[in-house]
Image 1 (tube, rainbow, N blue to C red):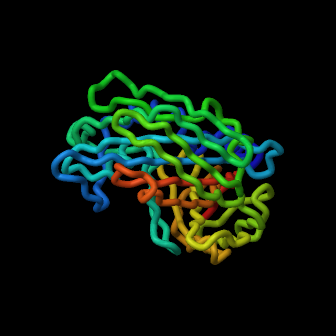
Image 2: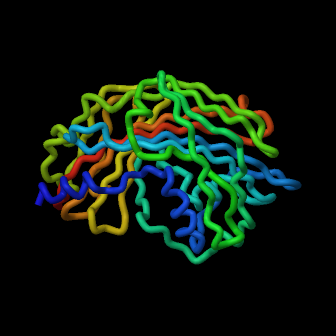
Length: 305
């Protein structure tokens, strides 16, 4: 059964949003989310920039895994919470406080509609490129679905999911030439390193056996940068929900408490290293700008009581 779980984990679609965000936006138009307290301008709305770089690798795999990048500039209507919009279109990320766990739905549920938020427009930003080390990647504009008038415009993504052009531990630069409503943009920051020294319940991720959900599940890793976050997802392959727990990266240790996750059967543990960089001050004319690195390692397992 464990070997089967490993094959499933290797095929599992990671949390890479990239080109898949177009389909995701179309798929969540009938869902709703709760606001998280960010206000928008009452007269004209606000424009927000989000850059994501995501990598996903299967524990024990010989290849470098998959990766992608996405750049989006979304104009949010007046009186609408920008964070709710990002959650709705699959670009938000809500985590529990450090040391705590929360249940996350794997399939969105809700009775509301994005129509209640008003029309959302992702704005054109000209030529958009991302450099990491000595490699420059020109991002491709992806038109959003035209099946509805509620979401329009373009997002910019990598053309494939090759991990090599998006390495860990490198200096990244994001450039946009700008458009009629978006000023030119230049952002530079360093990416976190890959997870090293990771053990889950005392075992190497590639050799992970069954995990008891009635006992503490200890995680140990080589500490990363101050301010970075380690978050872990525990889920069954057939389950409708997952548990997410977050920890301070610099601590180097974290524990999933007994009973935090109650699933049983074949599943996986996905450990993420997350770094966010606020570039609002560098983004003239934008209400907010964020660059997010999310590097994931997936280990197959089976959960028992």
